[in-house]
Image 1 (cartoon, rainbow, N blue to C red):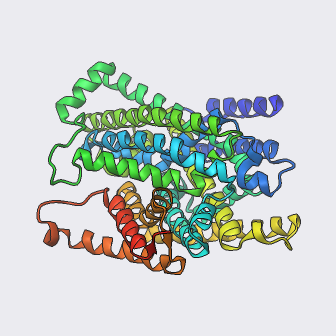
Image 2: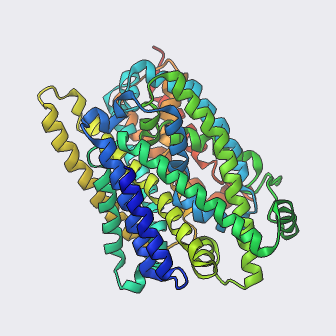
Length: 502
């Protein structure tokens, strides 16, 4: 380990001496390769002697502090890294409204959902739906998770790959599809054996790099502008960037709507999401897992506040230096074209550190859900360990291929702000999951299991109609991110209709 790190340090010293004064795409590419080599080393050390239980739930031996810290990177991803700062000129610090809702959601998960998962000793959290409602409900819940995570993770992946493509690999004339293929191949290499057991450690490394990049870039911009923290906040206030709460009840960003939406987004995208819970239930005990979740609630508030502060700094910097880029392109443009070479390196490392946690965890969770929930691997007594392992590896490869296809689709769409697309998609795809779990936990009614898929697919369709024609239906009142709660409520009402008293 020491020899490996010593070698990396020496290589970096040589690169800095030879090229730091003349930043180039070649240097950035070398940094990416070195960083990935470090990930492979961590994977090799943690993935030895792994089995299917290691891949799915880390043998229930994960350290809660590592899981909590690593989940910061998974929760934020490359979307938060570039989209949240880029949106400050449009939404100011309004994203903190959603973050306050996140805290409510994390605490709800800690004391309502986690005890349920540990009591039932679940490998896939959707096994609860089978226990409570039946096989059709179980399969429907797993299917909606697969759809949700497939779209959400690939949207996040596209955002960061596109930034790397535009600012780094275009100069090498590497096509976008090949860039995506190479990155997915990298992720497969370090998750192929260890799964969750490896991801707990790699996510910790990646989150550390991402937060270091956030802090270093913020400090440089403040120094360049000649401002301290309080002066920076005052300059942002003068531009109107520090406004948090929207008090207009008719608008999408009304603070009550945003807080409620944040709570429901967290409950669905974390609490009933196999990727996030796969890591939480890999912790040894329920008490430690609850510590992980509550700690994450407060850490996320601080970290997102730091990202918004960086966003304000970026817009102040952009105004002074006449930077034309906006939205998702603002941070990459300033970091790679207006900052010193050393900081460009820090940005690239931080960016790819934001990329990998959201993609590797999603691929692992989708593989787990397809194997356990759709194929019924845990119920197949005739499948020995080696056969299960072989099938799991094939599924993992097919998941990677599906990611490649959907990232190319997002390239065609090419939206300027991916965070809006991701949250909108979550409203449609996670709503039925919210309704299913809420009905199961808070109702004792017996459901007609075979009718559950019809209800769960009907609710998003009704929501789409409401969202599309909301101007004609509600007048000036606008539906925002609370669409996910409306979707969940419609699902719950539909399930109540097809159920009876037990």
